[in-house]
Amino acid sequence: MTSTTTLAIGTGAGSLALTAVSALFMGVLGTYTLRHHRQVFAWTRKIRRRDQANTDFDKPAEWLGDLYKAQCRLAQKPCADADFGDVRQAGTMIKGIVGHVEVLRPELTEVVERVGAYVATALPDPGPAVKVTVLHHRAQLVMAMRQEAARNELVHAILAAEKRIKTERYG
Image (cartoon, rainbow, N blue to C red; front, side, top):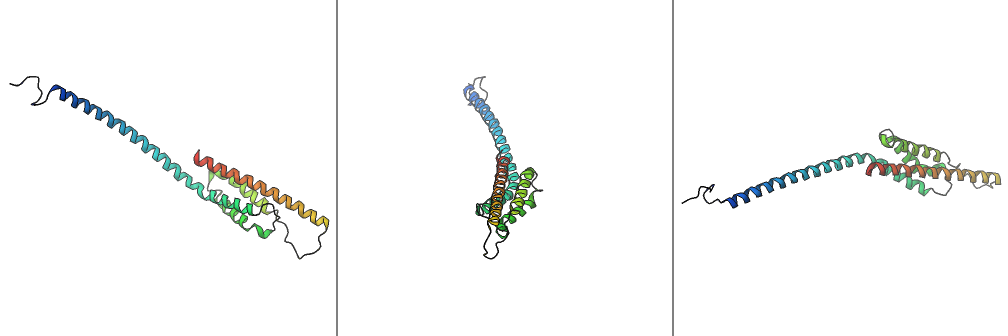
């Protein structure tokens, strides 16, 4: 004979309770998994947006690095106009993108101005070896010191722009 409390043939109250508890547990686990995946996908979208925004800083960072290397090659030596080729080229490339990178406009404008000031300190081309007077030699030394001071100001402007790029990239 069968009992009236049995819900189905072969199903007891214990196995029914176990099934209900496991179904409830799977529902809770599924809900937590769904919430976790939503958080992961939101984080991934945020990182992807940041990476896409950072590509705007790739060229300026590269050109600032090139400019820094070019001015390092000219450090602590008097330079004539012909020596500034790499500095002029990097300055021109940076000048071309000043309007396109709105966030870095003040820093890049400062770098372009410092490049112009540095290039303007070019010493006159040395002529044939002639005896140089003391006054002319002192004047050239003063111009060389002004050139070095302008180079130092350019270095500070480059480093400030690179720092701003790092700040914008990594928050």
